[in-house]
Image (cartoon, rainbow, N blue to C red; front, side, top):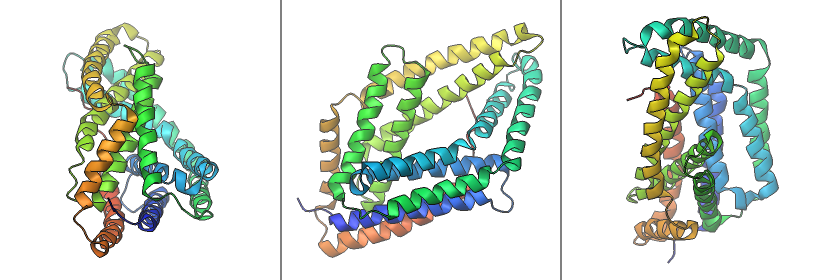
Length: 329
């Protein structure tokens, strides 16, 4: 079955990556009226999306170039990770404080968290974090730009295969009770898959992208669970004078996380229950079937249109995407 030309997809993915990096650089530099909490959220969201796209280009640019570019983007995000964690911890604390029985115990902790958040922000502003992040993003862009991309559609779907395989492995290697590291890896690879399927759907708007519908609740639940885990760790490490008062808070957090993990187990079983090759072959067949009735010119036009749409969507997404509220049920 003939699908989009390999040259089209290589050029399209590269154009999408460059557009994503442009938007991240814009957020790193800062925009008028955008506070640091939202700014950091946009930077990290944009970097994760660009790394998901980069994974689709791994075969095309070569493993060495991919590793160097991926490491640069990873390190660019690390400069802002501590502040982002404290933003999330504060959001969870304020959400839980809406429950009358938990509010008194959280008041003192919130003041501690605010001070940690302030110190993290001071560190970013007083260091070369912004300049270093911009330099690393430039390094990633230049490293990919040095290569002649020749992955084609096979290379792009190999990227999907790797993300699915690593996500599935993170869950199965974790056993019946996956630890924090396995859950975090599962979440990262699931977010990669979600971003990749969103990108592919832009190439073929009529593609139903059934795995994407399964990924959405899984990523959300894993994100909520991780937020609660970060919050619980911060409370335990805070060494509050009256630590006993937060006992009910920690009990609530642990019970909620256990319930979330039961939901995650059900979602993971549905999504990652297939052999990776079977999953990719079936998903690719569905995707290509959506394109089968399109002529060469229409398919080529679809790629170019998708690149423009994705670049625009990146701006709108980063501008309108609110930071997670740390909500718990």
